[in-house]
Image (cartoon, rainbow, N blue to C red; front, side, top):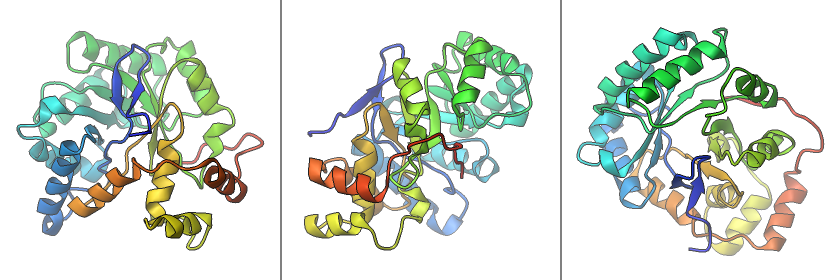
Length: 279
């Protein structure tokens, strides 16, 4: 494979550059078996970075994932997220323990604060560090933090933050202006959620032209673009085995300089600060 297979956390641990998201999974019994099969197929294909959250389906997604990971837990780098209103010193611990129970595991590889909230960051960090000391999480980080939020995190004693999970894709490039460079300077990878914009990419764009010329899907080109960005991993969701396989094939697409230039001309890089977007 021409693309880098991993990104590296600040402590030197490598995690898969292409993983799997689980937002909106586990909420419909009719597709439960297909979702479990998709997750297990992704692990088989090396997409063993899997992200979830206590918010997703009010815990139903973690329960589904716990079922999908039966016999496979040790092959996976498992990520979950805590609600901001649960992110007090004690609340973080309670939420993590509830997530572990639903996920049927004794530890998380990475635990994230889902977005900035009203509880002091010092409290949240204390909770994360307590969980780390207890062996219940291996790393901690944040999600949906803009540059000002990251500065506040560091000021609160959060230098051990391993990653920041943000909305980032070819149509939403705002983080490139200041947030991604800040993280790169600190050897902190970004985790891109909704890397194909949750199905909201333009109906007709340069992506379609490149896809048609290559005989692949437009979404494959969009995902390949994200995966080509240094220091960025991606966690697309797929609810079927075929969709997982399509995502995996995108990893093998190496965009040419001409294709990248055409994408930049259509989806222009930011020239000024843009507020961080969320879904």
